Length: 115
Length: 114
Image (cartoon, rainbow over all chains, first blue to last red; front, top):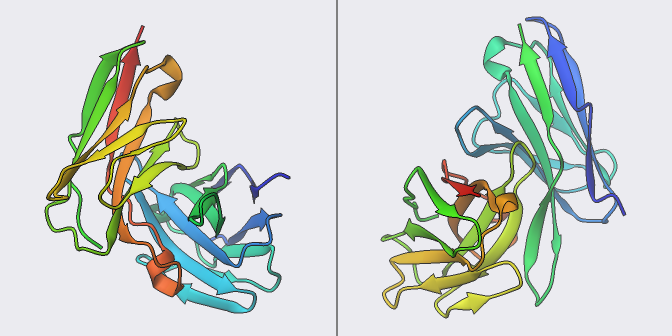
């Protein structure tokens, strides 16, 4: 049980290039999230999904697109990367934990640098 | 979700208790206090949460004041591996749609010294 995995771990892009970040979970959870974290800051929500085929905008969605074609995968796309998108990107999946509570399980992060 | 205020940093000696404060003076009656931590560059990890009663688990204790306007996370015997950023988050315990998201502030950086 790997939990939440992210691909790639590191990436350097030039301004204007595009790329897709992959998040995969093997816990069969419905909800998934993409956050970004800038240096010295907390995480900010980009987009989220409440189930296969559905997505919704978070706090900072501009410049990003997402897709949830399969329940276990949540893709984050940058169509035309900008230096302001240099950040660490975290994916999370929400599912049941103990004592009836739910918990967000986070992936290890993807470090993206846009030059 | 209610806003939280945490000091930017603190330190403690290894083996001693670490008491991390959080103010949430605008907390509503149906909002819980959650604590997460983020060890250097890793994804955040859930620690504990509570509504109004004190809570304890294998990782930490959570003390919430009677008026619920502040709380303290206690790591009873801090180790070097507890060095991390700790986030205090106030949110409703409803896991539907946008209410399921977590709102992170800057957190408090705990440094455990040998």
